[in-house]
Amino acid sequence: MQEAIRRVWIPLPRVAGIDMSVTNDVALLWVAAALTFVVLLPVCRRRTLVARGFYQNLVEGLIELVEREIVADSVGRRGRFWASFLLTLFFFILFSNLLGLVPLPQVFESVTADINVAAALALMVFGVTVFLSIRRRGLLGFARSFLPAGVPWWLGFLVVPIEIISWVARPISLAVRLFANMMAGHALLFVFIGLAMGSVALLKPLPLAGAIFMDVFELFVCFIQAFIFTMLAGIYIREAMEET
Image 1 (tube, rainbow, N blue to C red):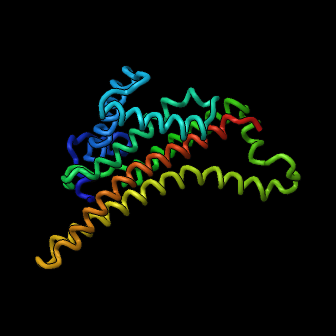
Image 2 (cartoon, rainbow, N blue to C red; image 1 turned 90 degrees about the vertical axis):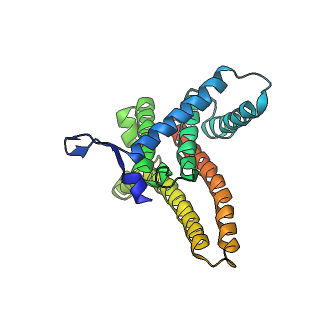
Image 3 (cartoon, rainbow, N blue to C red; image 1 turned 30 degrees about the vertical axis):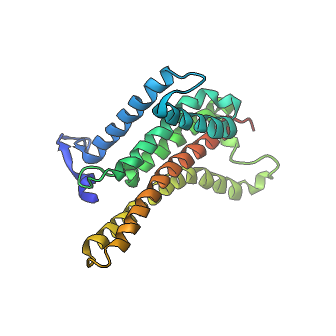
């Protein structure tokens, strides 16, 4: 797994101590972004009251799921502006997850199983929420939000650090949840495949059946992790837009 992630496709010099080479991980991120663009653009341009064909029904069904369950329920009417952002985030994470199911482990890997990618996505969401909070409440109002209304000022030294820690814990929990679930799912899949390859002929069907089951289950995990990440992002955006 690590060999696929660290493979360098285009070596580039370091800039400010940072290796700018295009690795397998970076290339797969480009692939996930391209898939998001290619899948969403034609469907969104030709959306009709009645979807036609399996492809359009499938993609529009996913779009309507995100719009109904996340944009409408989690964000609310004031968050309609963020519908495009949340849709793009959902499909990008979904395709990043699904790349790990391509049966070429030396090339394809679920890039969200890399903590750096998961952390970057979580920090992006965190940055959006901080920007919205400051824009709506002002810098002073944003700072005051860490001391909830009704709490005596003399408790501030205890309450404020707890509020700051809970705020900062949001991107950490987002990143770790996505990273851990994707890494664990693929690790179990490789374990079953390895058992199937190393077992005697009589026992091969057992780990092989386990690998097939894990493959189907991993497909579900890819979807549900993209959905949960996007739903939490929508909740954080709604909270940032609410007045205190």
